[in-house]
Amino acid sequence: MDCQNRAARPASDHVEAAIRLYPPEMHPVERMNAERYAFHIDLVRQLAPSGAKVMDVGGGIGAFCPALALAGYQVTL
Image 1 (tube, rainbow, N blue to C red):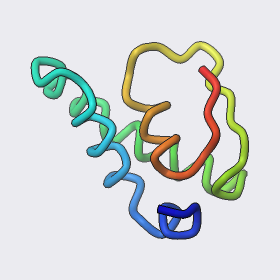
Image 2: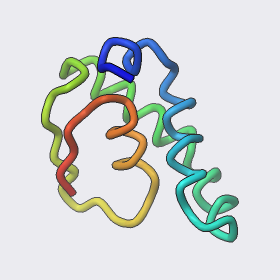
Image 3: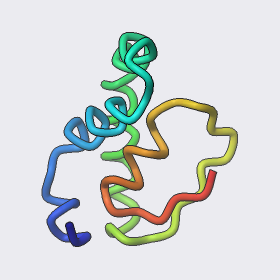
Image 4: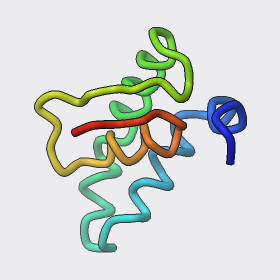
């Protein structure tokens, strides 16, 4: 999927796809943060076009970085 198609999808779709990459036992915990992750992806979208490089300083094991990558960004954690 190219960057334009990824950018057209709602951030929540990317977050859900990223959550599914985790072991099933982690899904409930990650879904508790899904709304926050989607909000932050929308903030990034306002500041940088899809395909841009983004560094997540202080990121952890959450689904934010994978979701951002699925949204078309080049992510460094």
